[in-house]
Length: 281
Image (cartoon, rainbow, N blue to C red):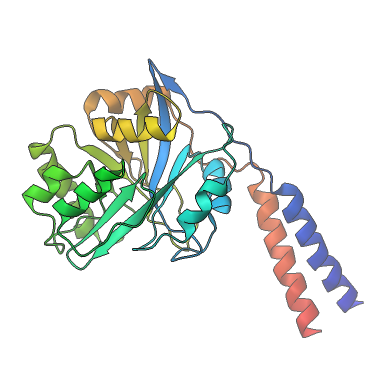
């Protein structure tokens, strides 16, 4: 009887999880001539140094109220090769190819590229290589410990992460100070919020609101180049041009949305308890 009950629980957990795993993507709000797209431009995927595949991450992006994400594994492009296989569905979040160009002196996010950028050069040269592919360059968690972020480097990048789910408070201050430094040299530099998600359910905890003229990869990249972004951290703080911050507040972009979350949690509990019962009994 106990073995039968455990088997039923295991099967029921899988059934509930399957039925409740429905994802509904809601179109982004508008503010005047712009779409206000919620993005996460620092996402790690499988195969590579993340745990979820690009198509699973796209579903998670829809659940988390994101309109665009970028796959940015460290110095490799395996997961990015899968991105073109995703269907070009206007009712799904946009998935961009990218890379976290990783050097001992800096980490640099490349978004909108189509092949690996070598990490054996100074930031300014790497930014030029990213731009040659039509991509944008974003300083990743630019703490003081990264000597590569000189004034010349910060003047060259298109954006810098000012919102990042960092546990060390002094690093958070570093990101804010680096953004302020970069803005003095380039008033149009884009403030970026990213989750840097690898294996935790933190996709979009920090995010970027992009004011794009069109809902496309081209529109997203153009907006970042022009600095039409607002960064948001997981505490709800907004960073960027004051007028754009007010527009974000007025547009009230949606946050994470998972109406079947409780059913999904129940499915996980039933599946693991049932599996444990089957194994032990």
